[in-house]
Amino acid sequence: MARGGQRQGAGGNGGLRTTQTVQAPAGENYGDKVAMEDAQRAIPLENTAGVQNQMAQGAPQGLPPSGLPSLGGPTARPNEPITSGIAIGPGAGPEALANPAVSTAMYDTLAAMARITGSADLEDLAQRAQQLGQ
Image (cartoon, rainbow, N blue to C red; front, top):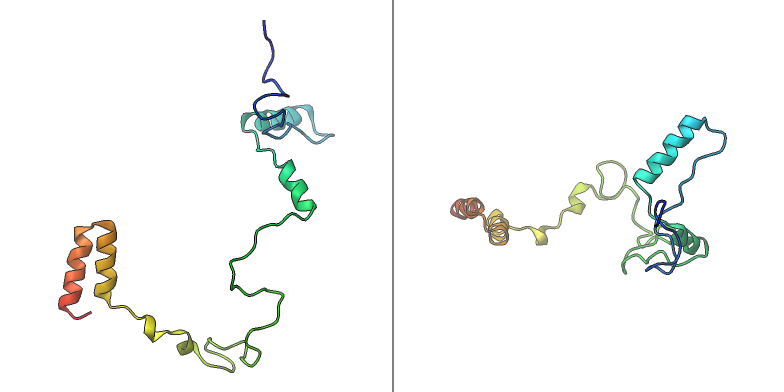
């Protein structure tokens, strides 16, 4: 007859542990140590030892999407003041951030939202915006 708790070792995962080992720091009071161990058993943490080893060995951590600048790289706009786009300091103000070519009528936005959601209320709002010329 089998006794004891969960079995460790070989199984469907090749003998790898899927949760972290229950641990408590040495020197804790007995009651505190038991409570800490019980909490770890109640909600076991995923075993991340393999991930940490890969990180330590310099495994790739994922590449940023192409086209994004590097924070440590040279500036792409060496002649533009760092204050460009804000209301103080040299350079263009906040008006430089507006892109008039991207402007969309309220009707277009509401109509697109109504199509996506199927909302009759949004469709009514879109029609009202069209009647008002917005």
